[in-house]
Length: 415
Figure 1: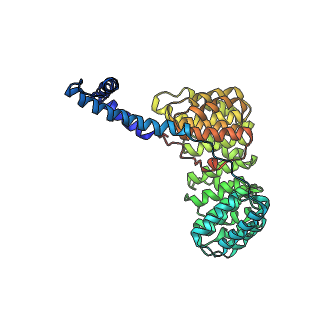
Figure 2 (figure 1 turned 90 degrees about the horizontal axis):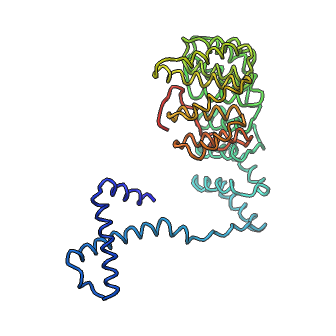
């Protein structure tokens, strides 16, 4: 397909080649017909003979491209369904995998873990236990990370303590993966050690590690235990605004109603950074802050009247989050404004609108999201639409959802 596109682009840029192709192709067929009748090219002029040869080369090039692109898939037969392993084969494979995990090279052990992902779960109990046992004594950093990823992907909860003990691993990447695994498995016992790690952080600075701690607390059972401490850090205006923005999202995620006053103060303060205001507004909607409704309506109306294209662009994020908060507070009719954002020419604006529709879990947005999933010109918007549809339908988040990272609100790019 790529080869066809390259050829067509070249031909389009040089219409002379295109005309020559059409001309020589016609001459080729003329020569072919003549040869069929007389078995000789003697009746063709020298120029026609040369053109016939050039045309034949061009024709056969395109015939070859067509055959590779279209004919091969049509002739391909459906592969036979994979046969299930017999009990004897399963036993043998278990023995091999067990030995490879113990004695193999790093590359062989990684391959064994990939095989374990596809191994029948009902027969893999001993192997799963072996993974946890190996994790406790493993020295190789890469293998620790691979063990932790496997545990998360298979939702293994045989030994949660074995995961938690790696929160303090001397290698930062291993510790990060251990926290991500605990977050995925919803290990409630992860809350106290995460809080301890947070209390050692400098909130006047922003870091990826601190963002991970805060977001993980927001998704863990009993994560609300950290709300009093984090609310105090949110109120301290000298702390890093991006860190405070992460805390705002956390307060909404755990439904901390005690934060309404602090969130409102930031949300409607025009001197505050846009990201911090947007996330505070978002959380006002999540905690069902009815007292904030009048100001949210007032803010939405004022943003509609924003004059000037540049100023309007700057206010788009605020307007989107304000609309989202009002929808969460029960004002469903305003959701039409989110649909307008989903049709914006700016891919980043569409992406944010699609994510909002997914977070609202409103079934009325399914038709639009299905269109975005199938037809949006931006692959990232298509991916976000698939994730949003899964959220509305209550489908377990996929790797795709976990891979979606939220870029800064002010970012504008062609996705």
